[in-house]
Image 1 (cartoon, helix red, strand yellow):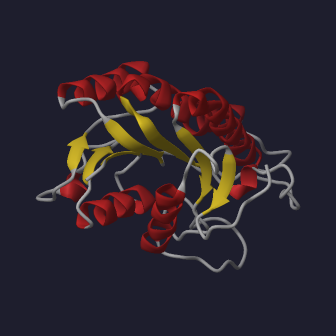
Image 2 (image 1 turned 60 degrees about the vertical axis):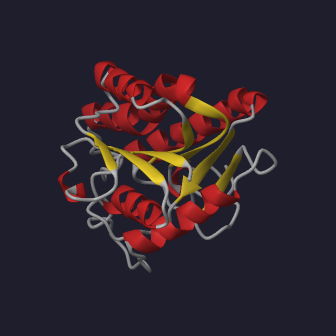
Length: 226
């Protein structure tokens, strides 16, 4: 049995990941922005009120991990936001907010729990293929694209630093998932459920090794361009 820390586990993909991991017998710690009410009566251990934009909240998370013994075998950072915008109507405060959550958030969280990562741990940062420079063929979504491109760089940087310690790191695209984040995106997409996305992301983390570290993976197993 491995210990998994899922950050951003209140609902959607994060909640589905926690439930699936718990169902297969793993020890699961769910770091939630809210109170974690979705886990009432479950085997998942909830760390409530973990806002990845708050240094104090992330420090509390690290302290709680230390109190329970500390060792984390796999960290999956899911927490994120999506806001729609377009050139000519940009909200720069919202751009800063998305960067704070989507880009700085995973870096702050991983750094805080680094002392608790096992020697052969795995780290997955859920980003999005809209953060890929090579895959951008439509423009728009400035804040989200920029913040997720930044998250991809965080993942790649962490790979270079942490692989030297035996820790594998991957950037992960969950697919086009039907959640509250994506409901307002214009266009006709083939959406998948949070459960389907969670299954794919768990498979990617199960398969992640030092040899495949430092890559950008679609939940379906496709290697994506940076």
